[in-house]
Length: 92
Length: 167
Image 1 (tube, each protein chain N blue to C red):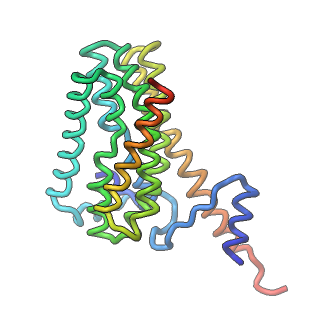
Image 2: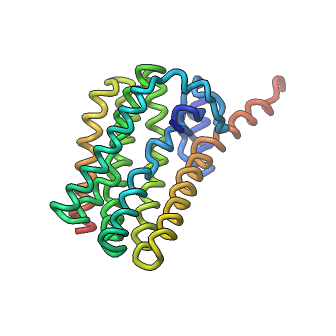
């Protein structure tokens, strides 16, 4: 909702990458299985964050030419490739 | 010529030059509650459903493959595709691309959030760690917005205003 009511769109876009799901999930993980496990999950999330940067770069470059559906598909592949690479090479 | 000049100026200032369409308006953030009327309840339900599905998937992956694999999905772009589709339908592809540019900056904030949370959850309490991590997201995302998108456009505007009209 924030990204709809905030202007300009470039500023509203910041909230498309807000850690709303992560806050709730990490809090639940910390309560249910302990802070050390939640910390491990947050460390993996760094790899996911790098993938998210790749997703958004691909989306920004492709959206005008290809439209949202094709762009999302290609950007998801970019997310999986980058997040997976960082996860296996750096964090594993 | 003007583009070469602005790129050189941006390089001298140590800032990347990012060109946004003029339709995006001035960079100062503001609230437009009227925009809520553009979207129906179904649009928001779609986004919430995407978010809930990913939270559930992260939980399931965490249970099956361990918390490390589940943590990877905490930064999965679940809401972005729905947001891009909705913005494209209501405002056009240009606006959707601009939204994605903003999301790039937010993503760097997401990395900062994860790094602070990973450290804080080990050394501080969960509540304080998540509070500090959220502050890190706000600091990095808003800081990058001001540094990369707001200040250069403001400086360019001032430069245009100050340019003499005759020799």
